[in-house]
Image (cartoon, rainbow, N blue to C red; front, top):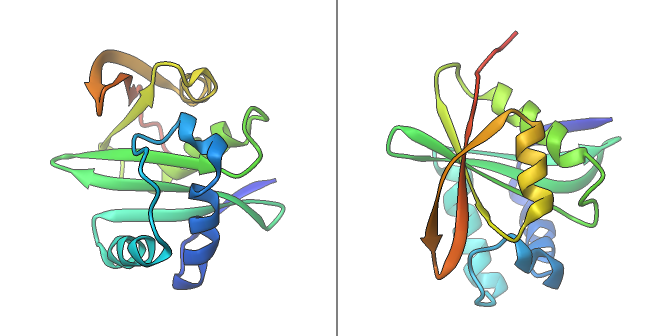
Length: 152
């Protein structure tokens, strides 16, 4: 069963290990390696930022990834990273649960590399629709937006 919990400072090194995985390069827009010190500084800013909603994705209470929403202007940009569990449908459920945690009416945008077909399918299955493309850091990128904000 997939669940989300709010990230804590104790999650910093675990998330660092995930972002250092070579296979996550498919989804990352940064090709530069970062030090633990740089990551820790970035992580502390995210945890303290009132416009950042940052969660750990858990499978049966075991951490398997993270999902983050950063406010950019009037929108939220979603970022998802799963450790070793790509293509199993867990990302779809994490995306749906994360989006439900934001207030109704907020526009949620995903930027996904065009070659990242697994992520594209996951966001489509989570009710996101592609609204265009653009270049981000020399990468052809698809822009997706959450289609509807039905909340319970």
